[in-house]
Length: 305
Image (cartoon, rainbow, N blue to C red):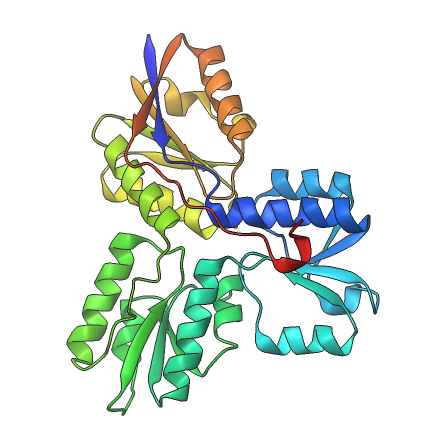
């Protein structure tokens, strides 16, 4: 008999819940089609479900007819893209996560006050591209980037992408502080509560599990970081999109299988993974609660009753 240990918290965070609710509420209120710039969240299952309901996902504003209604994704959008949307006469609803907006506000404030800004994040990630549109920044991804960084400024601050690895980011920030002793920290950590809680829940799983499966999209930063967190603890871990991705050789010799999911993953996919494992081997299921979450974000004014 194997044991399946479910991480708690896992799956949807408040920002993802809000973003998905925004698309569904907009479709109900305004009718189809509703255009969404970029995948509203990084999960193919969620995107396909919303497409069935009438959402059309695009990567470029040029794909949206002038005067249409559009939604910007939870990852955040640069001011220049917002300005272009206004020029096109688009009716825009911004589904950006409020915790990403917090970083945007910080970037503007520090830039206005004459700071040199270092952004810790992944080059090419949609959140990073949006954030860098709010001020001039120096992007660092790793220790090598820190070693090559040359900034001559009395006023410096670092900001971070909201979905980074806690452990890796801590190492990079330590290197920044060592190289630039005067560099300041943001008033409150930029890595979001959901990223922090889910990584800590994985670390708790690692105390008991000899294999950890993370349900999430390959394009999801926070899901990939859960895999990293497990491997940092010395536990084999794999990122899977759904139950079809499971390989028997992974679970054959594991007695305790930890299962968690990224912040943009609906729990139906986790239930499918649990059912698939039980289909391979008799298993008992147990929840391991690391922390309770009760965060909720309000809907934008356009969609309030």
